[in-house]
Length: 440
Image: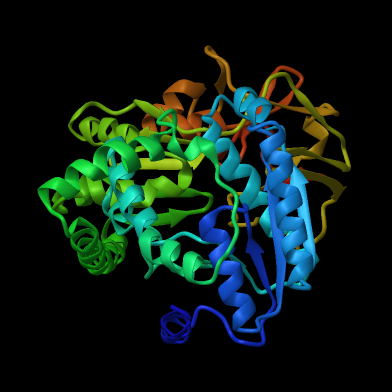
């Protein structure tokens, strides 16, 4: 087993012989065998143990056992105790998920503190099968069918080529002691249900189920590569970046085969789930205006695009802008400067900069959101116009409307910021003092 492990590590370039490794050791069979193999390889290790406080005295016994083992190997030992049940309840997640989140967060912190290159866990071939079946039962994309990766970032699983039986045989041959976790025999947890109830039935159907599943996982991994390549290639045909927004062309998206999968892969990193994507795809043939939300982002089904933008807290109230000052609202900063008109004055073509006749303004100016019934005199147009009608005529999306700010002097709109000035405050030949406002 040692020779096979060394060959696997070298073939997959999992880590170098001289690199320092953080090894997660629970005290159970798998992690004890992994630590013994690494010790035989004379690898520089730090042992990390998590006490999840789920099994009373047994949990304390596990920690003491792993501590003594680390000392016998002359390895540094780190441990932490978590109130896992409390964490799970507070975050409304399962005990399994809570334990996972807690341990991997801590592992990364300890890895950095001890200057280790990688975190090693004792996942093996049986874990791969169980993971694939769990993903299938819960619903998954192609990625969920590829099981567990041998190396992902700083996380390394050297024992993936070995079955639980091989690991058990190695422990027996080398007379290794380990701690039995009685909860592994219970079927309260999803993984245990798969292990004790589902896989035995599959073995009756196919005695070589482990070999078959591992071959399937290898094929699925190849399919994933092809899938990801196709997704990346097509993305540029229907997505464009505009400032802090992502514009997804509805017409181009509808042309792409399997557009739901393309859209899911694009949006999953923004917190949208498969059910959200299904609803968004259904909206492609509906009228515009519908909004979809993840925790931090929103998507507007506009006329020609799905507009992805960050979900900002709705601003309320007004902001005062002094004669020579600034105000910061979310990611925007409004700078105001007043000065005597220079002889060589020229207008900026930047829509984020506007210049006004300062003597026509009443300071401090105010910045506020638009309200129903707001009117102004758009420069270059005759008479008044409702701000809401201006939005319609210039095809403002709902997101554009929500992000619009009005610059106001007394009760008069001076500027639809970044878009159109009011004619009453424009600079003329008689203007002596200028107010320049820039959005940064």
